[in-house]
Structures are given as C-alpha cells and as structure tokens.
Image (cartoon, rainbow, N blue to C red; front, top):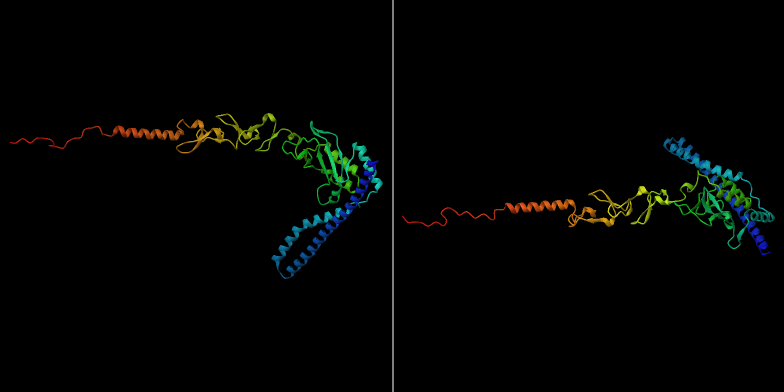
Length: 352
C-alpha cells in the first residue's frame, strides 16, 4: 500500500515537472524569437547605412557594409531555421495523472523493476547485462532526474547512464560503453525521438530507446572502438596494445608499446625512449644509472666507455700523449754531459 501511495506521489511530481517543461519550451521559443527579431533589426539598420553610403558616394564604406551583411547571412539563416523548427514542433500536451500512472506501471512490466526516490526526485531502471562483440560491459542504470527535465533545452539530457559493473575502455576510464562517456549517452539518430518522448511524458519509451542504444554498437561513431577496448594504452603515443606486447619503464613507471620503448645495453633494464640516454661514444641506449661523467672533461657517457681511472677514451688518449711528450723531453735533455772548459783554463804557465 505504501508503494502504491508513493507511486501516486511520483505521478503528481512528474505532472508538475511536465508543466515546468512546457513553460521552459515556451520560454525557449521566446528567446529564439527575440534572437530572430534582433537579427531582423540588424538587417534593417545595415540596409539604411548601406543606402546612405551609396547615395553619398562612400563606396569603400558601402563595400565594408556589404561584406558584413554577407557574413551575417549565415547566422541569420541559422536563427531563422531554429525559430521555424520550434514553431513547427508539436504543442506539449500535459499528460493526465492516470496516463502517467499507467506509464509507470508499463515501465515496471518492461524492465521488471522501477526504482524511484521522491527526495532525490529520480526515476531509474536497470538493464540486463550487456555484451558487445564478446566484451562484457555489465548492466547499466538509466536514471532520470525529474527536476532537470525543465533544462532540456539549455543543458545535457536530464538522465544519466551509470555502469553498475564497469568495464571501461583501456584508453579512457570515463567511457564505460562505446556510446557512453562520463555517464552521458550519445543518442545519435535517436536524439529527436528521445526529446519528443520526454516532452510528451512517454517515459517508458524514453527508457526503452536508451536501453536499445546500449544494446547496439555503431562502429561509425563510438567514443572508443570495441577493437581498442581491451589492452593497455601506450603512455607516449596512445596506441592500445595487448598485455603481452606492453613494456614497463622502471624509471618513469609507465607502460609503453614496442615502438616507444627500448632497453639499457648494460643492465638490460626496460626503459622508454624518453628515459633512455644515447652514449655519444658508442651510440648505445642506456639508463640513467648506467652513466658516468668523465673526471677530466665532465662529458656524460655510459659506464662501459669510462675506464677505471674515470676517463673517457679521448681524455685517456690525451693523457697518454701528454705523458709521451714529457718522456721525450726528459730523454733529450743533455744534463749528464760534462761541461767543456774554456781554452787555457787550468793550464800551468812554464817560464822560458
């Protein structure tokens, strides 16, 4: 009995929401009419300025006005079409309370259960578990926010599609279904039909159409294609690869595909291209822990290109050359040859 009374309260709440929705549509039509009227006044103003410029021989000014008019024609045409579409649309007829109540019962018959929260002002149904191309996506809850229905013409759709057992795409955790991103469904060709169903108070048709979108897959317009659903996304290029073809960089702690990864030639640690360092001496990729600076020239090389004395090959060769030069200088210096005495030095004079 309590559930029956709550359902009556829900029907009354919905009838009030449909009344607000009708008022919101008329207000939206009023805004479009004002935009169209403003564009008409702009055309009249430009035409008056154009005539004046032509009469006075201000041909440069006339050309500028003509260019501005041509630029605004597209916008004017768009405003006219928007106004015409709203004017031609069917009048929102407020459903009677008994019709709303019957529609709620039909939702229960169709989905097995109707969940509603009078305080939160929401109505929701749960779909069967959905599987597309052997990828299990789980059941979804389609939740209608009754107090958001009046914003149908100014914001997103007043309902959300919530994954109850989420299996999101590997490349984007917000995509829980090829046609659902951040709990908003891409309605595609069903956009107009869904909007009309909300306007006319046919909530069972609304839930059914959204559920049918979830049960189908359109390969032409997915947020993420099913072929890219599973696997791991390369941190560098974004390409989705299978688990077996994924490489983990131990330096930056991200996953990479084979094209964006390498390995250290010394310790054989897997590294990405961004974390690898190419030794300028041997041109081999190494990780940061397998590099060292030459103690002489401070150039960064791989450890294999640094000798035990901490020198690179160039500095080692230069040191050897310097040592050879020093050795040559020592061997050619005549510091061991006796000094030659001057003439008559040290001789005894003999008297005649």
